[in-house]
Image (cartoon, rainbow over all chains, first blue to last red; front, side, top):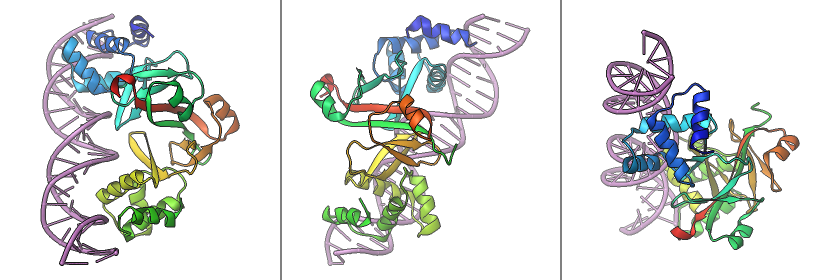
Length: 135
Length: 135
DNA sequence: ATCGATGCAAACTCTTTGCATAGCA
DNA sequence: TGCTATGCAAAGAGTTTGCATCGAT
């Protein structure tokens, strides 16, 4: 998913193309790892115009809803990055900077620890859904 | 990990055995799924003595630190359950009630959808650590 | 008696929402 | 012009912390 594709998704769903949205999207195309709302704000302040937190939050969740971004949660914050094409795309995530590295095959920590230069500190493999009682 | 083991871990690390702690731990031995701090408080009010949020939070994070509980985060809240013996223990988690079901083998959603009575809505498979630049 | 555990209250972080204004189509 | 996007401000949820008191050893 690149910038133009993302904007096309926006417009084809009836949402407007604004400078702020383009700025936010551009940040994600230029950063491959996971970013928090705070990260986005900091980069917007550095490189682009100012922007308020609420607008960032509103747009990030819109982008997730439209399938432009994917969202995950760790260290008490929501993190976002451009959605992978591959549905089975999982990541090694640096808990310090958010950098990600794709995982190709079903991995477990021990195998990963040997084959990657990441220093593994933990992992999360969970499937969510509704149990029979809650459906 | 049962109640007595958990209490032994507590004492052997220099922490005191109190009624409140035993109440909290008992709730986890009697509930197999993930519980939030709020769930714990509700059950304490129903079945045991009252207890304040801060005490619950302090103890839950102590128990995680001591390896008695495991913690995960979804839907904006931290969820806890007794730690599995098996390090490769992953779960199917009901996002409504927190019920869990163990996953034995490396799964992906499609395989799971066919072999389980959970209605799958999403999954999270992530490995955390420090990238070369952050180590 | 000592030192950790608890309760109360307040603070903190991240996120969301209502409403008026600004801006795209 | 009409309707969406944005900014401001406030609120909301979950969680953490300081401090005085209670309680286990």
